[in-house]
Image 1 (cartoon, helix red, strand yellow):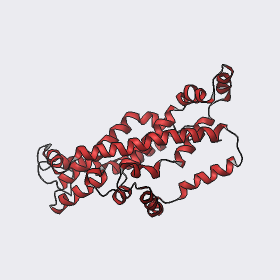
Image 2 (spheres, rainbow, N blue to C red):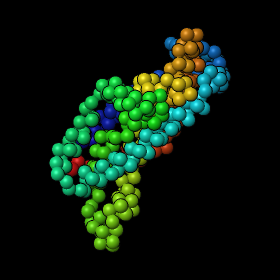
Image 3 (cartoon, rainbow, N blue to C red):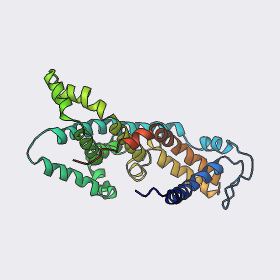
Length: 273
């Protein structure tokens, strides 16, 4: 690695410029939401003193409590089932021996190559047969299995020395006790990282909830915000749109900031096995 101070300085300046370019739209959104009047679109200078008037106005335009509850049920319920499935699948592919193990694992990873939009119609047909259309359970079901999560957990389990498992077995532990008391505490960062990825993806999901849910009382945040934004955009009230957007994304931002160190460290598996 080049230790030249000038090269290091240039690299830091480039990274700072990229970060500034990335955060600029978010800064504009915050300033727009905090202005009492419509924001100036050309510059990042408030036209009046910061105010929470737009947030109060946005809260009065939509049933945010219902949208939040539905979204939490959708993302939380999906994640809970995913954690069980990816843990058991990752454990199986990492430690158990069974016929066609490698072939089945590769076929399982094919899911990563499929564009989600391709599966919308088949999934809706399946949900209709089970009578689960227009329900939060039906909204969750296609996401219960995660190839990415299974791969992540398999790699995490493979980094654990077998001596830990052998010692637990010699002490009389069965596979459930080994998994719960020995393995899971050691792969906790990977579980946290997957949880953040899963929650973020499903919190921001729009097309699938729009297709499956018809009842307004079962809408999630993204669908509710889309309806809210159309009305605000019609009046060119960009401050109101920005306030609504912040109401949608702030919980995810807080979640990532709280667990960012765990999230980043969890991918340091070293060489994949």
